[in-house]
Image (cartoon, rainbow, N blue to C red; front, side):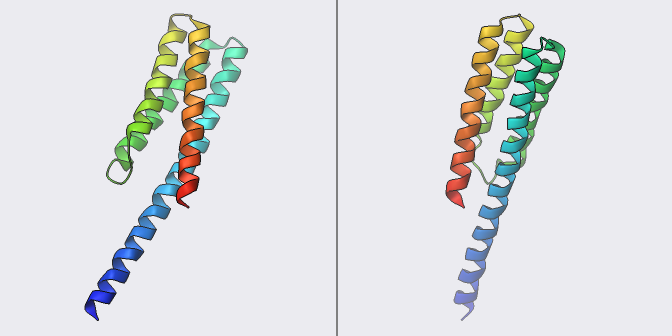
Length: 122
């Protein structure tokens, strides 16, 4: 009987952990989608300091969630997304707008992929 209770406890822990990580990913995806939208809007309005600020905030958020979730999630996706946002910052500092937009598009694709993957787990 103790084994059955232990198995039930393990299954419950796995389900709770999966639910928690999925909810964290959904929150993260919405935040980063907002970051990408604000960065694109700032670039269209030629407000480059605001775009840099928003993209740096997004990269820091990627770093934070990577450190926070590294024990329960695969963190390569967050590392790639952070790299795209930091590359976009670098290109924008060099005033290379086409490359900046390209990196933002790559980041948007990565965010969509993360969202799709997290929805598959639910």
